[in-house]
Image (cartoon, rainbow over the protein chains, first blue to last red):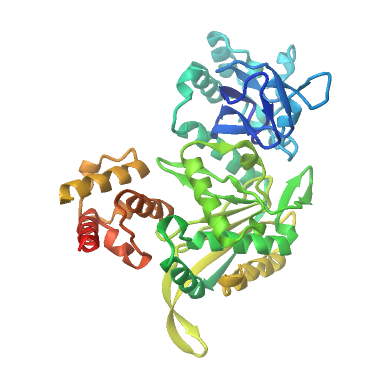
Length: 385
Length: 85
């Protein structure tokens, strides 16, 4: 069972897409796992033949549990697939410092929990050491045990819904955002960018294209951020174990709103390498799959920087909260037509407010301003994106 | 195709995007983007679906003519009639 985020301790296997004897290669989707973020498609990172399935349908197992055995080509002894399934980014040691690791059996006396929480756990037949604490220094509160009870009563079959579990998603968002606000000293910058050139370029391009090939301005925004992130590596990567690790590739997390009140930011891999048409079709596919609860495991854990865009409705400015362990998020407000000075005269231009939320542990507003200005500059020449 | 048939197709496609919304309760003169919380990606998917189902190509410049259900029915009907003529 791969770790698909800071707060994930276990996952429920809801679908096997392979059976013993099947050959799989790196990147194949082998199973579907239900987590707080919804159903995630699990990709294998190794090539080989499925020897044995180790986890049955609808079983909930802790992160790290082998799911199946895989025999590599020419290998005598099969190996557990779990190693192959761990995302390339190491199993995210993201647990906030205030949350204790899962206690080893027998360590229950060391658990910090309120008396009310202990009583409730005992009455409900729950081992207190298996509850995640959200109180001071990771103390387990009454509410934590209640939450655990609610999780426990949902039968696994029921959780396998075509739509996402928005309550669980909210819990995951809350955990990630609370950790971000607790640990990351954010700084914020804002830049008004004239995107008239982008709009003109797009309307010209789209005029000759059928609807399924048309490009939205969001694709240009993602590409501009990806290119700027490649040029400014201090904004692209992860802050882990007290230091910043720049990422070798640019995987842009795209914040996607989900109807009914959900949010996910899966990664568009190598966004800096894709041309605008490809980027658009990949974004469309990603949005579609996210909204129907079909994100892949690598998309959950790989994003190196995030873009959040309000699109054509809403308000003019969005200040993002960094998704840990990333160190930057770029926000795009709604496009507005404004009176604007162009070459000494006032004219009407389409303007977007672009913001950067940066991590002060990694860099400062000076570097952030250069990065944000670069995004603005790139958007002046959409044909070169 | 009658207006009733067109309405049915439009409503079905909108419901594919926003399955939780009861189309009977949507004001036909309201901006669909506001009334149904449809973003630019949803709207593009709606236009793509209409193109696929009815063969009506809606250029970007005509998008505002699709912003309410009432306007959209008239627009699609006019396009269908002109393609027959």
